Length: 199
Image (cartoon, rainbow, N blue to C red; front, top):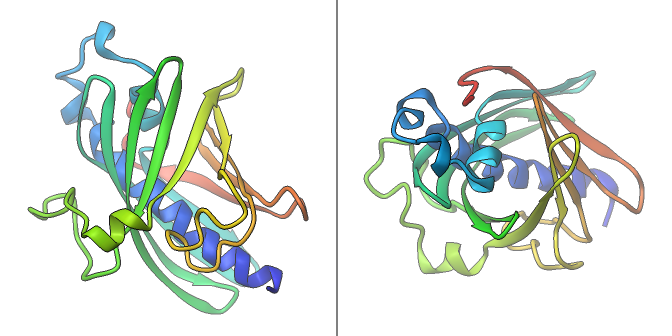
């Protein structure tokens, strides 16, 4: 498969990540969290929440990440990607579920195949069976800069992110979400442009 196709597919993955995280880490939800209740999943949600942009000579993609629900060790986010990537239209959504597992975080990206939803949609956190079966898991570990992980296998995320063949490394850093193909070293970098700080 040509590399541009893989790059396009990772956009859906990124969108899925972002959408779920915004709302749970937003100021409204933050007020209900005590310092003792903030754990790894909350930390990842806080870093992810906001508005991002991937912009270069022939691409302009906006990624909005908002929280939909969350308490304690579990959070759900909604990610929406829109714009153009290498001249091709992008319009993708995904639910991102974060769950603390010891010091690490399990991040499940669940694609939304149907009509677009918002954080206020009654079914935003209720994916279909087909969407749930297509989920992709990434296990994130904390490092000195933020959180990092990788997709689990060569084809594990191909249904969650159309065409996402191979493994992708994921880095969630303050103000940045980076996806890197370890084989080619090609990186897709989304820079935060605004939105809830979540901290």
